[in-house]
Image (tube, rainbow, N blue to C red; front, side, top):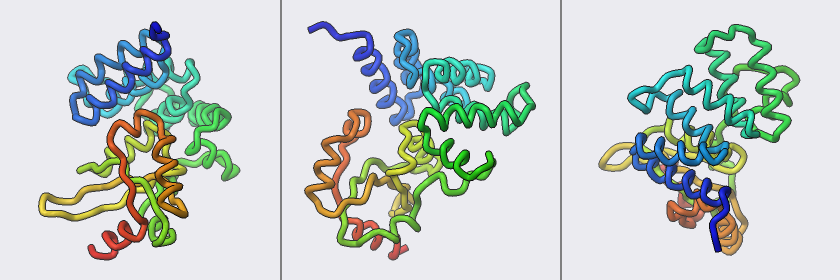
Length: 229
């Protein structure tokens, strides 16, 4: 059976994510450019993110803006949200706060969780707190429960980038673990009553999350790591 354009674009996106996680940013750009040519909005968004974060030799905020706008036009709400943050940070020629608010509202209407939370407060704010589940959330869970560990990062910013890119704000939490080589920030997904439920949830993860080899562990084991620091 021949691959459809959508499936081919998904392959380009996944290949780009693998390169990104290995810090091969130029290779990631190459894959995502192929995905963008096939109208894959996620690839467009990630190209904008590479430029916003200065991860490419020719990175520029102007190029980040262009890719975010294109991804937003193709129905990817995270792009509108990131574009709004650039407006708020005065990194774009646009200086109208109302323009940022409008982007947030559009992202919220499409179900993007961070934008929905801001709109749900009754007023658009610039506060960043509450966007990420962290150790306080983990400590509040049942020790006998189970979770899925996804990845570990050396840089906390990378954890948040991953959460933003994959829209995991409502399900993923991170914690810090110190080791002989320094601190690692580990990302877990969900809280489940039993190991079987966690295993079933792992099988249901999108391919771009399953490809990194997620594994099951008790929430209590994570809480012990936090308590031991």
